[in-house]
Length: 344
Image 1 (cartoon, rainbow, N blue to C red):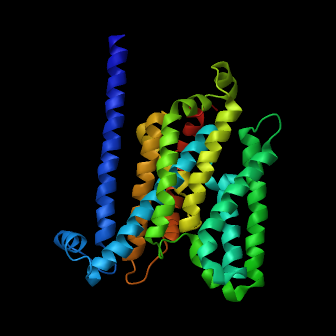
Image 2: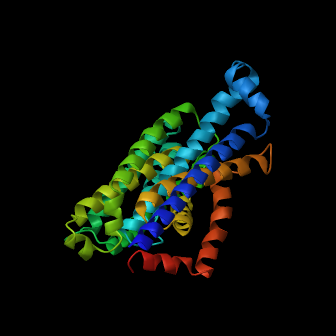
Image 3: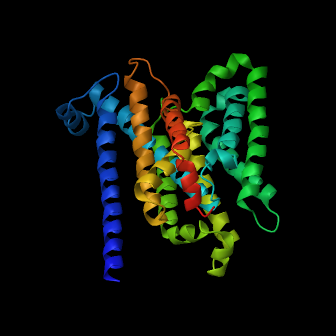
């Protein structure tokens, strides 16, 4: 009994240490993102222009461009990673991600409609993308309902609806080829034009979604065991699953509406966090959020400095990083292992 108690404390200490390290890495990568770009700043210059010379040219670059961009990148990474973490847990499917429930496709079609058909209403892109993503989630859930919404039906309904919506987006781009230049940044995922308004759009969802998910982490742990076992333990499976799907879709919708169709974050980050910290949602949720923020900030920084003064959109860098890692997981049989850990 004492040995088991000691082992539990050791595991808990390890997990808390990992979270602390992730927090330090997030601070470090955020500082790098603010300091480096087409114009580099020394630590002394950062402090000087952030605290004393805010009205100077470099001060405005830091306060109006670098700082909101780093914050938005972190919030987007948090939101997308948490969304993927939740979906993989409730669907007990290691390949689940925001894309699988139609969030990206719904946001994409809404944004394409504004960009192409109503280019004078550019300011509506973010709210319309959010509405499109959230409405698509409701449609997918409704289509998958048959005496409950099983994970398999959710996945299949999401694939079908996503294919339909993607066809709509591609059709518009074919019919209006002269206007697609406005769409490219959104379709690949870009942080180029981020403002403080985007940060204000993102942070309430990240804080509320992360807090609520952490409170319900125990329920998520039970759902990963299986529906029958969860029901036997007194959990209202459909109600909790619906709640988690709403949290995941709102988080992803907010992120997509600001940065565009950023792939791989919701798919890869929860896998990586799970390999490092384990399956317990009480630790996996904050680990996924912190790691998602770190990775998106780093990818954005790489896109800004690797071909400076030109920029690679963060979505392209993320694809270059995420695709090889996903192949690595497949080759190492990591995905199969995670499936077993999810009750399959």
